[in-house]
Length: 174
Image (cartoon, rainbow, N blue to C red; front, side):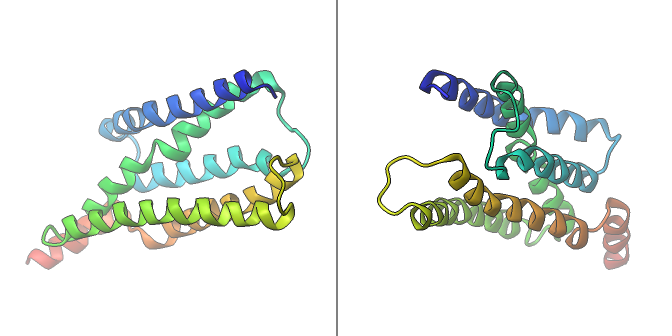
């Protein structure tokens, strides 16, 4: 892929990450879906969109990559605001600031560690090389897929539904 084509794909991924929070907020405010459902949906779509990355051969045609990148940016990065709103639902008001602050800290730490570990994976496969093969990237993207899967498990098993959260708060206030 040429540098111009790769830059275009990255642009659409960034555009998705910019548009995603507004789209997620619009959907969440309409009240049709719960925040937990939207987080589960985001995790599942991120897993599906991430699946082509683990193949050692190109799976998507190059003309489809901008659309893929836009969707990946929307669902992988753009729905993070829903997680922060869900944390506000899950924690008492006395500690919600601490809880959301911890999410922000762990996002930055996680990003830094992900870059470090990704580099190690690539370096272990091809020590000293300045360019890598698609199969080496595919092996590194297995880490991303594991993270998407862990996020899905966390959302499914760690977050209560809005109804259960409201019931817990109503009982605690009595």
